[in-house]
Length: 521
Image (cartoon, rainbow, N blue to C red):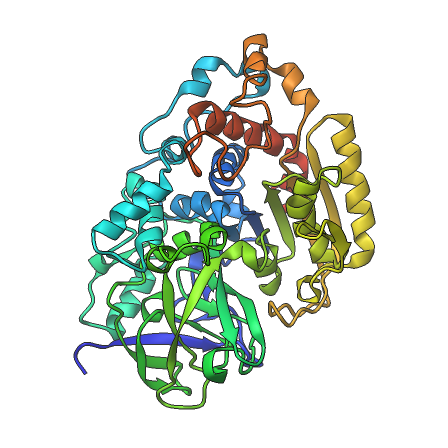
């Protein structure tokens, strides 16, 4: 067959399974092998998360700790900011991408807050006209990929990242291996990670409607080496198809058919999709919360939001059947990105959280508080019924006995008006839904986006005055949707830069804890 590709796959249920980036003899991502077993995760939160990332990453760069980070796990807006950073071309320096220098509060000026440098994330989040971009792509005859292409137009294209017509992988070493199996491909068909970046995990959700089981969502990892659902869910898909239990190389994902699967070799001969599964697909899908907001209210989303062809190499047949599924925002299944790191046995994690950990306001409790409490199996707040309910048992992954200390520590820091973070060690619980083995201890530093009277008090008086305007009156709790009139997700320069500099201050305030956790002294 001339119009086919030879793609690798990995059976994640095998007793000897190890993640390819640290174990595969042909595709190991060498830059992370000698790093401590660490990761950072960035929660969902649209352009708010992407803006905060400018401060998080600038501070981590200043600390010179990126070479100690093995993984970056991004969800939704956390992926919008972290994925382009990982794939940034060598022609754009990191400081430019991160919107220029970040400042402690006493040095922040109104002129600094107005700046929107070219080729910066500040530019992207202040020009994030997602609806207009999606409609443009629809008019360009890109049905079923209009939204992800729009995300690519906003968060990849300004940085010279080809997010639509190229495949993606880790490095030249991986490209060479892929071409060896597929001589019809060439190096220019791929984009790769910037030198020595951490290994990125872009979290999405496979959404299945099964006649017997009803609707369920399954955490799907998109990485430079593979795409798939780690945990095996027997018969959970369309027509009883098995969901999960395998990873497939990205260029072999969303392909309409697998002509031959060789279980022994871990290879599959596939027909390429109509469009390449390029970087805009995982980045766009990870941040697809808009789909859940408008789906079933208007038929237009059926044309704008993507569905992917999914075949499972664990099915015991040489040519497994392909079915089409909706894929959605990674936050549908787990909004912090912690689960993907725990599934990999990461021992030291810094978690950056966009939504406030607040039990005093129903809106914040239903988002920020819930996403942490559920990881510990605690009661969560049901927004619809305005009541406390049991958390989904599938979300439990950390020692429930440790939640009370976290809650007390965070509330004490909030009351004191300083930066809000909390560090502790947790017994990891077995979790079959996410494929977490459990039975070991993980050290986690939680860094919260939370109101700080200390930070405000250090600002120059004219910048403090800005916080009393409608534009910034709820800072740092900037709305993910509809913060600004007639805009869905785009922010103003003042909002984006204030968030970036606030994220910088939050991170530098926890420098000692971050260095200790990441093994950086």
